[in-house]
Each structure stands twice: as C-alpha cells, then as structure tokens.
Length: 123
Image (cartoon, rainbow, N blue to C red; front, top):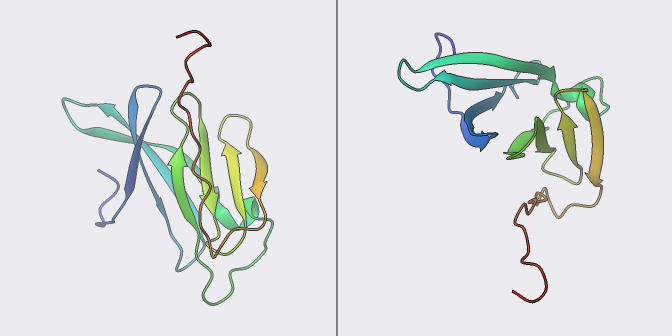
C-alpha cells in the first residue's frame, strides 16, 4: 500500500475518497499523504509530500518535537496539523498556503473543525 515498509497511518475521508497519512517525525519531518485510487484493487497513490518543519516555519527539529496531522477537510484538499504544544494550523494542498488557526493550544489539544451544517431557522 504505502511503500515496502510497514507504517501506522491515520485515515480520513475527503471528497468521497479515502486518504491515509503519515509523518516521519524521527528524521526529516516529511508528511506523506496517499489516496486510495481503486477500492477494488486496493491501489494507493502518493498524492502529496511536504516538509512539516517548513509548514511550521522552523528550520530544524529539536529533541522531543513531534508533529501530528489530525484531520482532513471533507470537502477540499485542506489538512490540519499541530505541533502538540501550542501551534495549530491548516494547509491547503492545492495552493500550498498555510493558515495559523491557534497559537495557544493546551499542550497540543488540537482544534477540531466542525463541518456540520446547522438547520435553517424555522426547521
């Protein structure tokens, strides 16, 4: 599926497709995102790779630093990440733009986006 090595990946659904992602926290902090192209054959394709340190505006990983991608937007190519300390951000994979969501997390308590639509008044 995701190369020859076994990895524990997180999964999520976006735009009707299944995604899996994994961050290499021990070396270069690369984020890998795959999409399941064919449910019948189980074919996964690497959709996006990005250096997490660059997303967080850092040039090197310090001991103990760890990053987590905790969600993918259900309707667009946007992901949500945290440094598990105080910074939470979104990253648009299409235009490669980073947006800071929160700078004062509680020990990495991630921002959980709510995509539910509220019923209109009178319903």
